[in-house]
Each structure stands twice: as structure tokens, then as C-alpha cells.
Image 1 (spheres, rainbow, N blue to C red):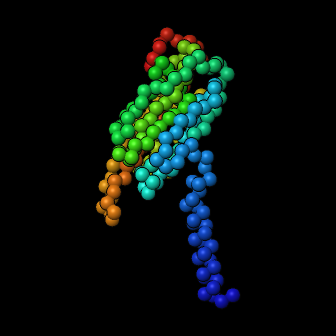
Image 2 (image 1 turned 135 degrees about the vertical axis):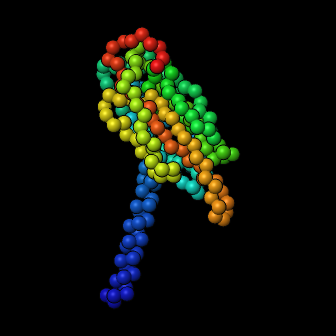
Image 3 (image 1 turned 120 degrees about the vertical axis):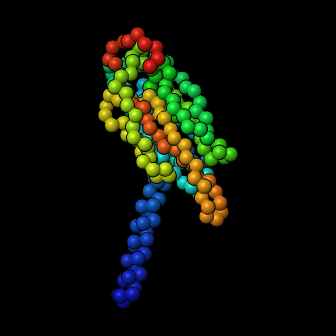
Length: 202
């Protein structure tokens, strides 16, 4: 084959590979489309253990989201009550932890075009009178705004109890002029006692 044709074939192959890599997010099982609300709940007796999201400036500075659940350890027992906790409003920084020592077992969210942001609400489940301890916050997820974001609970025995988010708006001065909005998350992870305790809410 002529050297010039070989070079063109190599370039085409490289472009196809790059294109496939840049669209990997299309293969994920997202729970929403851009600008769409969603309601995700783990099956009964399971809690949230992983999240992943993919950002798009072109689609309302919004993210696609996916979640994974896992059954709780047998010693924790069955959840005795589950509920939707407080709504965290769009366009604001917020910190939210499940009330009544609850564990996060679901998420729902609604997108607001007016602020290019989402409101969030955790679905929480209560396990007898177990109490959280050895709590910690993750580092910022994503590490930088507008990057792909992923959390996997680092150790069996830790549970997601909530999150703290920071909110960023960046004005893009290229034509056309528009605002890029995104959030970074610090997830609140705790262990749970293997005995009943006296405290209703920590």
C-alpha cells in the first residue's frame, strides 16, 4: 500500500479508537437522561455502595448518574423503617445526613433549567437502634469540576449516611456566552455498631 494511504488508514484507526473511548459513557446503565428527574431506590434490605456520574456542558451543565446497591451484613438485621429525608435545594451548597441514624438506600433528583442545577433527596433506612461511629468524609468527588465522578465505598462495613456538596458557577466567555454549573461531593461514610445504642439521632 502507498505510504500516504497507510498514514491515512492509521489516522482513521486512531480517530475511531479515540471516538470509542470518548463515548464509553453511552454504555453505562444511567438512571436518567440529561435535564431529567429520577428516582432510584435499592431493593429492600440493601443500601447504596457506589455512584458514578458523567458531566456534559452541552446538556445544561448536567450529569448522567448510575448507582449500585449491596445487601447489608446479616448482623445489621432488616430495616424497620424507610423514608425520604429533607430536600436539598438547587443552586445552593448543602450538607445532608440521614436523620434517625439512617443509611442511604436511594436518591431522587429533579433538574431546574433556571439555575442549571438539581435538587437532591436521600432515601434513608433505619436499622433497629444501631448507631454510627468512625465516620469520615471522602475527598472531593470529582477531584475537579466537570470531570467524570465515581465513588465506591472503600471497605465492607462502611455505609453512606449522607453527603456535603460545593457548588460552582463558571462563566464561559466564548461565543455563545453561557454559564457552566457543577458540584463536587464529599460523601459521609460511617460504620454501624453491632449492638443497640441509646441515641436516636447522630
